[in-house]
Image 1: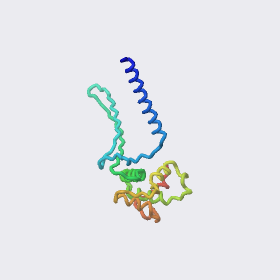
Image 2: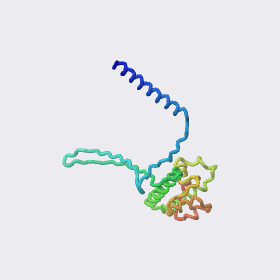
Image 3: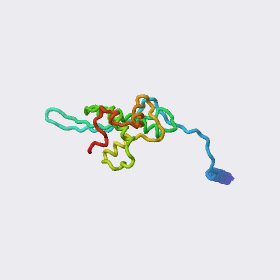
Image 4: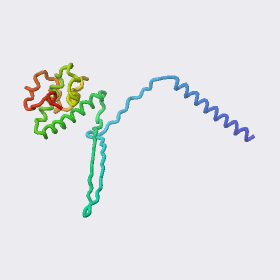
Length: 189
């Protein structure tokens, strides 16, 4: 009789498993809304993610070893606050980080970097829509870089408000920023 008890126990286990499987099928077929709050992953202020590629090339000389290293790096700022308008925030944040770098690049060439960036923002906002797509590739890329989104977002930091003001002005850009000698739409590339 112990064989029959073992067989009955196996059938009972299979029956329980079948009952569990059919109850899960009903739960899947019955759609219901779960009430769980969204969770967000945030990082400490100033955190960033870096991707660094390093290539070291060794050469052999008769007297000394010579090693040459090449490095390429990218960095992304990680979110430190929860905001419902994440795409707007990231779009503005990346621009507020990029504009000072463009200013420094222009400054290193002997131009007034701040004035040229502000003039480019002013000109991008005032560009005639019928002229879109008619410039050179570089001019269209510059227009895309200096065109701020019309999503109602604002720059977070007070020192970046000048970019917003330059983009919203309706005055003559050349007269507002006379220290910048060049327009992004007059450059020939």
